[in-house]
Amino acid sequence: MAKNKIAIVEDEGIVAMDISKCLTSLGYDVAFISDSGEKVLEIVKESQPDLILMDVELKGKLNGLETAKMLKEKYDIHIVFLTAFEDETTLNRIGELSPDGYLVKPFEDEHLQNTLNRVLGK
Image (cartoon, rainbow, N blue to C red):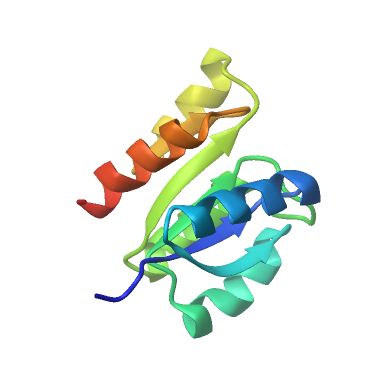
């Protein structure tokens, strides 16, 4: 059985590496790690991840919400948002995009695993 490929889009390098280690230990393949929406839009077609973990705040001109909107219009891809902010405005902005889920940082590995299992139908 093929492993699910998950992309990590996170502007904090240490956080991205921690998530990558967690995904690998849970049996997932990491398709790519990026810190900007522009980069994601360039490489997503080639790498074809099954799911993208998308931080709301990114480096570059596009934030995670704008990037996700563009990806959803072009590809049938699962997106789970990552955010350090749990305020109503942020959560409403996330909700407008009908994401597959969201996680508030910092999160436990178990929460990540449960979210991925639910979204990927495991």
